[in-house]
Each structure stands twice: as structure tokens, then as C-alpha cells.
Length: 276
Image 1 (cartoon, one colour):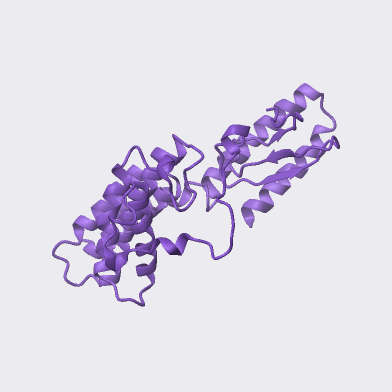
Image 2 (cartoon, rainbow, N blue to C red):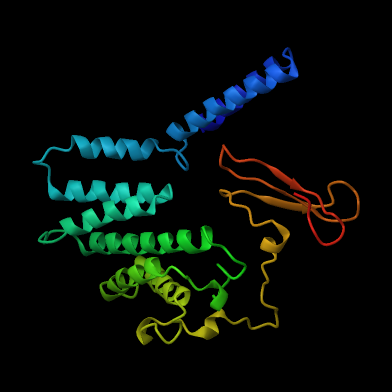
């Protein structure tokens, strides 16, 4: 909330101040203000900022050698999660692997902690695979379940490395435990991205293919975004389809929550294409 209020305050001040400036000077001031807000965002925004990560790094740096191993495990674990939130999968894996390594010989570590670390390692590896394949090399078949051959990962490292960690969680959790269903679901997805579902999934943890079938007649979803130029690379944005200019055709407007990003308007050319 303080972040939102400060942004609104700066925006209000800039709007009133801009009225007394020339268009060129006003634009320059606006750009400078947006850069200031972006810098503030990196420090204070709990969802996009790096403030929490830097705090954890400082805590780890200040941790004395005599500190309990559990404290160091906790910090590496939290650092791994913070890095993963920022999309730094390799750095997240390094921190989580360090936490896992410290578990050796620690008989007092609760099983829940071990399972959490293994689950996050599996998740980080799966996220790496998603970044390498679905984000950096997207196509219309990615992320539509059940995944078809066109959506199989051509860079399989992430999914292959994730599978043993999800399996470890399943081997060490009871049926009613929170992580178990998540680990089972992601295990099946990992095998699916490798083209090994359902046969490759251990029978005890296999989700039957019938679970992905609709009981009602419904066509398979077709992702036409790439062909229309709508497959934008953005962050948690929104999209609106409407006849914005009154020509009888649907046009598109999309956004991003990433401050350096832009709003986009794509008018309909009337021939089945959109103008960028």
C-alpha cells in the first residue's frame, strides 16, 4: 500500500506540473519520473522488487560461523525462493542445493523441511525448463493440457532434473499431506513435457489420461496468438478485446505490470490480421 500511495502521489504531482511545461520538456520530465518510480519499485515492490532478496543476502553474509546449521539452511532456502520469484532459476537452484547439502547428517531436521526443500528444487528445475522452452522458444502447443508433441520440451534438462525431487516428496509424504498432491501433479506434467506421459509415470502416481478429458463435447483449444502477433512477452498483464474504434471489428489492447514495459493497441485490419 505505501508503494501504491507514493506512486499515485508522484503521478498527481507530475500531472499538475506538466501542464505548465512544453510538450518536449514535459516528456523529458515524465521519463525522469518514471525512471525514479522504477528504481523505487526495485527496492519496495514485494512482488517485483529485489529488496527482500538483498535483505536475505545481507543476513547470510552477517551470519557467524557459530550459527546453528538450521539457521543457515533456512536462509539458503528463503534465498532460493526469493531468486525463483525473480525468475533467476539457476541462482535459485544454487541456494536450494546448498540447503539440501546441509541436510546431510542433520538428524533433527523435521521431515516437512526436507520435503519442502525437495519440492522447491523440483519446482525450480521445472521452472527452468519452462523458461528455456515455453518462454524463450514458444509455440502454440506449449502450456495447453494435455501437452501434445508440438509442446514437448526440446531442452529436457529442467524436467528430467525435476522428476527425482517430486518423486522424493511422494516417497516421504502421507496421503493427506499438503505437498503430496502438488508433487504428484507436477510429476505428471514433467513427464508430459518429455513426451513420456502416461506410460513413463510410475503407476502409483500416474494421473489417468481420462482426467484430462471433458465429459461434454468441446473442441480442443487452439492458440492463435502467435499467428496474430498477440504472443507478447510481458509480466502478468491484462488484455481486452473490443471494437474500440467503431469499425465493426474486434481490436486488442494489452498491458504488462512490468514498469519498463508498454501498453499496446492492435487495431483490426479487417482481413483477419492485426496491425502492430
